[in-house]
Amino acid sequence: MRRSKAETTETIRKLIEVARTHFTEHGYANAALESIVAEANLTRGAVYHHFRSKKELFRIVLEDVQREVAERVEQEASTSEDLWQQLYLGCRAFMMAAVEDRNRRIMLIDGPAILGWDVWREMDKKHSMRLLREQLEIMQEQGYVQKVPLDAAAHFISGGLNETALRLASESMKPNALEETMQVLSVCLEGFKRMTYNPPLSD
Image 1 (tube, rainbow, N blue to C red):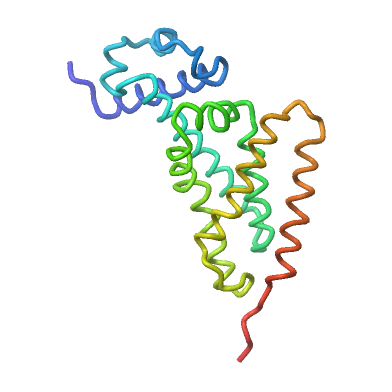
Image 2 (cartoon, helix red, strand yellow):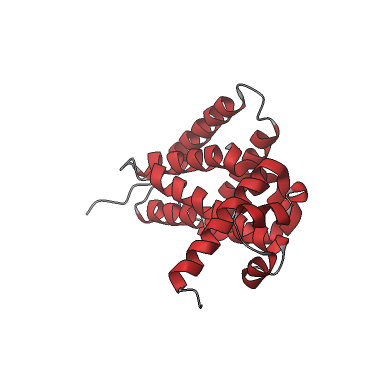
């Protein structure tokens, strides 16, 4: 019997969730496709019908993680109506979400190692960096940021956030690492605010 589109979608969703758990707990290298298939109550043939390989399944899982982190960024930023606070909250949410146990290994460790930085950056560009660029564009239009190239600015800030998240991931056992990072983030953004704020001229 042919499966409905809704059933197929649910099967894929379940497979991604199970795979994400295995990749999180065991890492890509030690996550056995056979175990993922068994827990998802599928056959290898069914899995290969949707995904060409374990690596392709991992790529979809990483995309799912990137999407979820971006949703966290957007949600946290939206809790304030102040544009500068939105920028801070969004940056903070990205780093906090990236280093969570559910995301850290897939997003920051195995993601770049297995798929390469080019693929990783394209995903980031489509999700969290896109939100960052949109925020900077709004702030520029409102006169809070100088007329600098937005793509360059977004890559500059995003690069710092990504590198900081990588550092936090490697120092996750250091008690004050996250707190120290947030202090630096706050100081940097406040300095950026004072140096670049340029309100529109009144009529």
